[in-house]
Length: 155
Image (cartoon, rainbow, N blue to C red; front, side, top):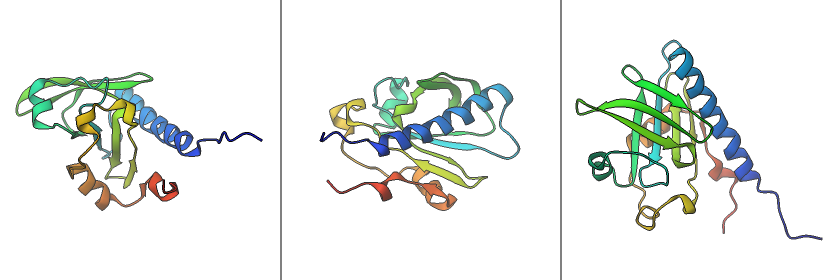
């Protein structure tokens, strides 16, 4: 008998990330439906994240972006999404791998999901520190939060 186990947690998280990909792909093609809008929180130092130095300094661990009224050039592929937003009246294009996401919420629904970023995606300085972000506050208020931590076994 083998000691190998099915990693259900990773399989579920991968499925939940595909929901985010589908929603963002549809938004890129058709715009936001109705009054929906999205909060996306991600690890800024994760591999593949593309941010200006100004934003990396302002958000050394996590950053929350909002896709609501003014966002442009949203593109989505299998691994990441890119979008142009204005930060302090300065337009910037950012790229975020789906593997770097920690939260996704749609307060209009209300619906939210939380994700775990694998340690191998992070540089050593970002593995520590869990600063509260705007998204954590919004996610808590949104209700219907899907969190995998309820299914995790203690190590």
